[in-house]
Amino acid sequence: MGKKSKKSGDKGKSDTLSKADYEEQLAPLQLELNGVARWLAHTGKRLVVVVEGRDTAGKGGVIAAIAEELNPRQCHVVALAKPSERERTQWYFQRYVPHLPAAGEIALFDRSWYNRAGVERVMGFCTEAQVEAFLAQAPVFERLLVDDGILLLKYWLTVDQAQQEQRFAERAEEPLKRWKLSPIDLTAREKYADYTKAREAMLAATHTKHAPWTLVDFNDQRRGRLRLVRHLLDAIPEHAVSEVKFEFPPLGHEPLQEQFKGALKPI
Image 1 (tube, one colour):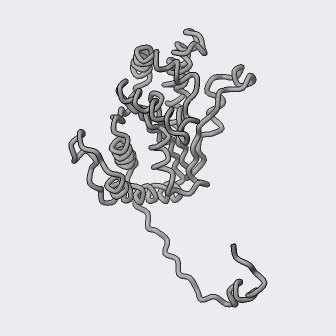
Image 2: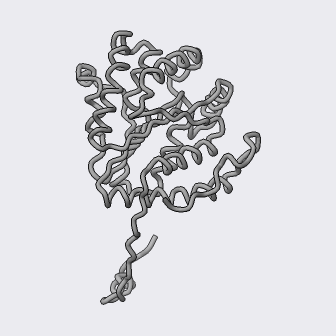
Image 3: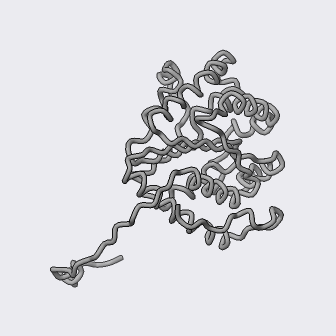
């Protein structure tokens, strides 16, 4: 594995990590993520990253940090809407299977099949029998993925209630963030303890040797992103693959703008 960058936890948690410092620490991690992408393409391996957590935990932000410098044809973000009437009649895991990666690909799940053990359970969108069936089937489903060669990483982003409240308030005040709020979010504020109980039951049933959970402190989102990406990189096997060097030959024709000089009007 390539040289590791300075860990984000080197500074005290009470300190604010500036955007400039965050971007400086993130850049080498994103470069190494590109190395992972080359390794996946070279070996045909498949990577699935499941990112779960409470509302406002920071799932979208860390997924964006992972994906933003990767080829979008290779790295896919999966953020499914609520199931259709037809999908509700399917085997629960069925709607997620088509989004699993092919050889050389990465699938980043912004929420996943674990909706059933979280929001669906707490908000009463499914029965307790359905939850119990899910908790029994999820480790088996993930065993099948791992046995087929998929690299599966599962992250739960932890955030305190006070921090969650602050982020809800920021979303309500910031026009560009209001789309993140929904009636379910408002109800979720009153069910913090219920979500905690559901999470503990989920972790107890689905934290397995073949597909363990990793909890990441996201009270500080910038440091949380750095910790998660560093952990992801460390969890991937040795992935050094030489980068292809490109040499551009001289142009064999007149540049387009010179050919049509005077005819084209730039805006």
